[in-house]
Image (cartoon, rainbow, N blue to C red; front, side):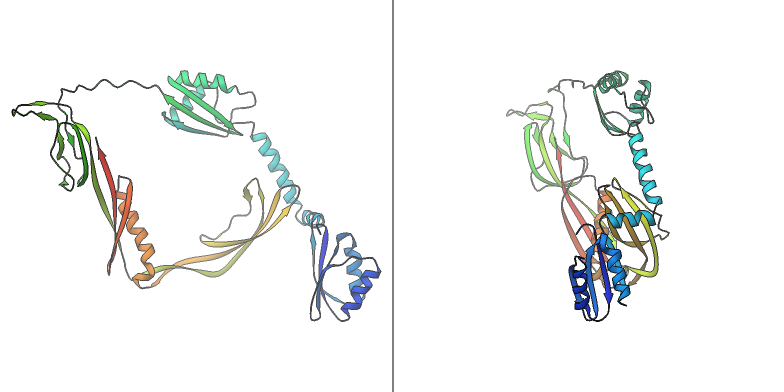
Length: 360
């Protein structure tokens, strides 16, 4: 039942009591008995009468729990400040949605330049958006930035802006001017396609930075040659390494026994609750949903934790060491990772990141 009361009590002659409740037209749902203990559920409007009858018959009442609207009413009486906070929060959100609280910028222009151009056309953080004309604002922003176009979308109190710069046509390539395709990284050639010029490497060759891969020179059958603009594609397999040292210990997280409890409210996906004083903690929550308000009341229990190091075998730390080694390699990596290889020894783990570099 939505509006009901769950009562747990102890005593004798429980069958007689249930019969008596039936005679008094008190509907009983979901009766559960374990020895002398019994749990029943009755309509909330008959809760007082049922409790009075139990007390009159000298039963020991262990717990009383309301569900549905009565529970919400009791919660409001007990936590009368929270509904006020919720109401104020709703009002603030409604009012704040009419004003610009944030500007998100993507595209070809720097955020500062876009915000400065917006300011020139009368829009900034804090501006009233109620009478905002997006078409006029887009045209004005594009003119201020000298952009090809600007797209502005509004979501509540946030403006999302994408400004695209004007494109300039690239000058034509002079095919009779020498240009070599040169290795910009050391690695192994995996494939080569030459459309114009003279290839100086083949698949499987090791190359260093600065080596010419396709020379900008055309050689004729009579031995003469001329300079050309080298055209083609060379794919080089490249790699970099990272190392994570093993010191014979691992990190573990344990609870200190300190507990902090706080009751808060969840509204529009944001939780309003007292700040936990612990630096490290785990949290568990009991949630009560109030319908039709769409609110969640959360009773949070925070348990303080600390991190310490204990002796360990390398196999116990292998996942952590692999992650550290990969992160160390990634810091030096400036290419897309195609594969990862790990080498494990007594001192730690080496991560080798493999990728490809395409030169044209």
